[in-house]
Image (cartoon, rainbow, N blue to C red; front, side, top):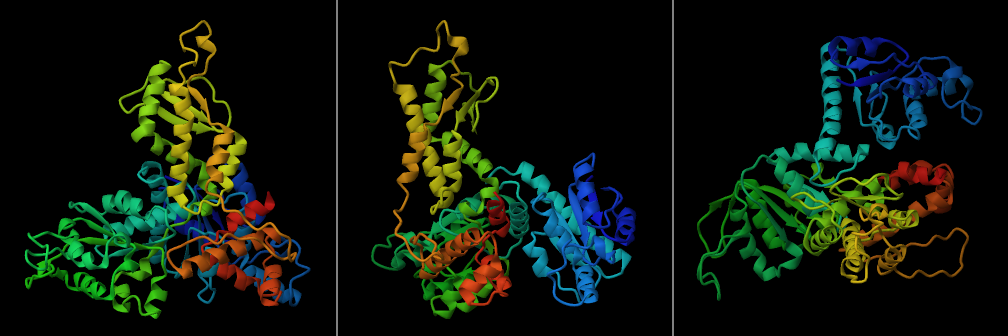
Length: 553
């Protein structure tokens, strides 16, 4: 079913897996980093998963790092410390070459803390084994099956393009589990990161609920109308209420109710929503009768609800009912450089499938005699001239400089902004080709040599579209340790502050080639506090692995 590599200095885990996970293939185990690297490079079949022990009782010469001269302590202390955590040293050394390889970190040493290091090095999962064959085998089976299921889902789920990175596979799996339960769900993340699309196309579809998906953006509703919109209103409840009108809770009965910008809900209505979650009851405005509710509630915000609770703007009891322990933060577009090309292709197909661009594609296909199916032309985007033409496909050619500009752009509006730019790019490119009456007819003596199936995106158009979103920065000189950041509008001052801090730490990391201790010396006057800087970057959602690649490049 899957090809699995075990990295361990003993055969205990290998024997356990071969007895209880016999449906999988286990390649010869690796005893140290050198052998692990050789197995991964020379395996005749791709290795799909690694099970990695933490404690390695191996010879000092085989321990990482190779150069131990700078490590503090006696030789015996250093050797014991490295043996105790060698698995993390191996994973850290493997990550640059295998950034998305799923790894499960294992240990049977009870007093060995592994959670923080496993997360720091992007391990897929980690587990403490109990020296009980049945329980250990069951725990490993659940973890292995979960990881393999995530990979299978990534090939099937196109409703919202997830990418193929480990982080996004894990996010998809987590949301798939949460979607099926009755408990509410909080989605956080910057504006334009896809919260409403994710709620509709992934969570609702996987919830198994037969009712409708109903979405409400609370930031667009006047406070005076929120109660009636949510809970409904009975005739005569107030001036203008000339008939009974159901609210969105009733419309979403049996389905999913998505409340965007939940922080805009007044304290009074927060109490009413709490009763919906607590007792599954509510009263329409002006009614004395209780109605029953049956909704899967998904709320979204780009504010810090915990901070709002401390400020008295959000009820703590409502936050607890909203299930904050399972809140999911969606990454911004700038945090998804690893799968930007796939996202670019997905959103290009998306903007070509509807509205004016769909009409332009149909007119272009008709003008140039390109065949297309019932759904129109299939579209693709490449950065170098494609091979032979494929029936029913139109390929957009993006110059490498344009691809680089799109990839490195900050995208403060995230996916919403990317979609807008690509939609405009397709429109401006195709309009001139469709409406230019002087264009040569595709039926000519040279028709066989004309690549009407390939349409280049003009470099200048890309530059102009991105320039329209750019903010002029102060280019004046200053302190040699200074870095420039953009101050961008957000829904709260806390979000603005976090955005500025995130940019600042990212730029310092690139400026000092990833030297966290140097950054700590600059910010905290403590050159040994690099770990504190790293933890803060993790809290802000900064992906160090992505930055490390940029440093190395």
